[in-house]
Amino acid sequence: MAVTTTPLTETGHPQDPVSIYEKHRTDLQRAKLGQNILFLLLFFGMLIFSIVTSQFYPERLAQAASRVFEYFGTIMPNLQWDLLFEGRDEQGRAVEGSLTFWYTDLDKYLSLIWETILMAITATLLGTAGALALCFAGSRNLMKNSWIYFFARRFMEICRGVPEILIALIFVFAFGIGPLAGILAVAIHTAGALGKLFAEVNENVSRRPIDGIRGVGGNWFEQMRYGVLPQVLPNFVSYGLLRFEINVRASSIIGFVGAGGIGQELNRVISFYSDDRVLAVLVLVVITVTLIDLLSERLRLYFIGKEQL
Amino acid sequence: MLELKGVSKHFTSTKAVDDVSVTIDDGQMVGIIGRSGAGKSTLLRMINRLADPTAGEIRFGGQDVATIKGRQLLNWRSECAMIFQQFNLVGRLDVITNVLTGRIYHHGFASSMLKLYSPAERAFAVHALDRLTMAHTAMQRADTLSGGQQQRVAIARALVQEPKILLADEPIASLDPLNAKVVMDALRTINREDKITVVCNLHTLDTARKYCDRVIGMAAGKVVFDGPASDLTLEAARAIYGADLGDFTEEMTSTDLDALGRPPAAAIGTAVDGQQLAS
Image (cartoon, rainbow over all chains, first blue to last red; front, side, top):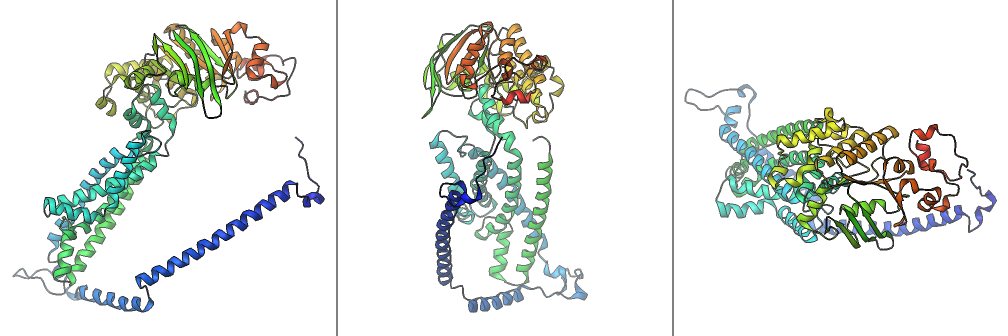
């Protein structure tokens, strides 16, 4: 096919495609420039406003930094190299400066860490079930009834909008001190947060399998079960495990308001002693969270690689 | 007997299907031909009610299925099987489960959610697959199959529905000529042996001629031809495919292997049809 070429001498003509394009391009760039300057001004205005409001000044930072180190000084254990692995003496007393002395309450910590992990597992399972129940109704492409869609979306927003610690506080009041309140609080937050992520996964599914199931006379639930779920399940598992990691962290904090887990002990040692016991608990929490992260990453990779779910 | 009376589908600016009235007797094999955008797919999707007609009646067995809702609608869809151009299987499920989904209308909530099918249903599904020589793939994931194989699984799914009528929306448009023949042969066998009415959208004239008792031609949402395949003259084909094509020959729409062996048509048109190149 012949391509019509415009002689170069004609490019100055207002009607030729090149000058039309060039004019369009400069117009667009000019319009964008104004917009960019506006955004930049707005950004710096906000930045200055927030610095002033939060009093984020260098001298305050310097002061605080020294105090942070001061605090770490108070929670540092007094370990001595030569005594590090000393056991208990005949009277069952640990030697000061040994690891045994620092971790006198290790059994208590470990059982609370175990409780924390169990809380996270239960909360994740309950929350995922809630998210599964809500996510299909909260997907624009799957739920044609806009009322049900609206309420599913808003309900998930409320679930994840209220901080876990606040829900836990209310449940501690209702159910009493202990892990039950913590589990429910984390589960509710999980249902809201995972439900939104699940719904977003759902909104990217292929329409074809759903049409196939509609075509054989499947109702809405069957369309979701056969047409959507097999497509999204690997993503759901991946997000569920990610949420489990987050929930281990959440469960270790939630004890601050009496909702069970290691947080309860952390709160106790901070407010009563503020000595090396704080660091002892913190180190255990960090180790636990890291181990769970590694484990769930392995699990995620395993599920992604799996042929059929 | 399937009876369409004044069926229309209007979008805001276009009329996809415009006042179509057709009667299809039980046991017929009908081909609907026409250019892309002629309204063939929309018409078929309205019969199965995957799309809702704007106006008109669709009567089957004395019932107007154009307006039914809820459980009645699901019942109609289960009796009126559909084959799609893109197969519309669930790729991540195995073949046998895909076929068994043809039974879900007959299941309660719990058993369909938990994928609990009876041994009799499983046997039925395997038999259906076996008729299409696909039984050996039963435990494989559907997306590991080739296009032709997937379409045969889709036909097996339709068969276990025990449908009264089978709609096929361009079943061979995504397939190579050999697989197209296998799929069309399967549809004709089902029509002859099981006495199931088959309504099939087709791109090509020669496929329609070869397989269908009756051909309906559509252009711009209207029926422009309706009669036995033998009545389909070049003039009629021109009306269906549009006179603006200039010199028009039947081979231009062909994807048939045999068409390659034919001597070149007397007049080679100026218009180039993509399908000719594809074959």
